[in-house]
Length: 127
Image (cartoon, rainbow, N blue to C red; front, top):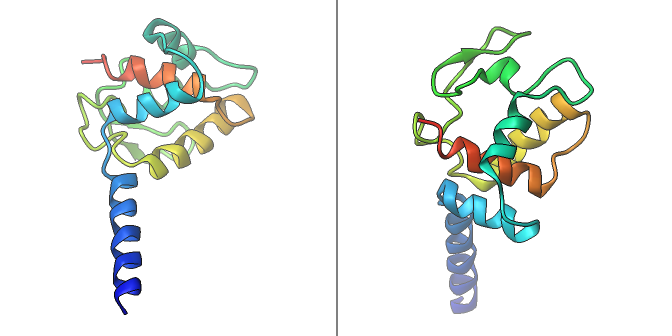
């Protein structure tokens, strides 16, 4: 019984630590998997088309500090920049899910940890 309680507590604690992060924490995770991020390269990546017809800014606009709409569905997209939307990049699993989906739309592949780090480093300085 005690072992079950300890195991459950550890799992709950681990789950909370996975979800309760800051954009700075997430940036450190991506940089640990790659190298130091460059905000200027992140902005360039965000605005560039990468072989497909969309860029990140097609839906999120530049600067991504206000509500926008998806160019196909018309669904409202809350601000992407953490300074404009404090809920952004505070859940690692959710951030990875959206990076995967959006990178596939823009690049036709997953983003690398370096690309995620650079985009996030730029988004963190957008006012």
